[in-house]
Length: 64
Image (cartoon, rainbow, N blue to C red; front, side, top):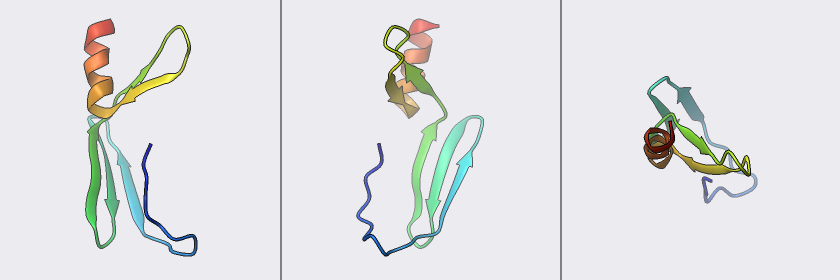
């Protein structure tokens, strides 16, 4: 998913807004790090996560 370069003893202030249209993640001192549509695509056969964000939104319209 998300990879960071955080040292084990380092902390950061993070705010996450799980909005209805977009999910936004803000990191203090760094600004907005994630601004993606709030969509998750799950494979119906395997029940595994396939895509999130923009790719998940694209799959929604293909399979709904």
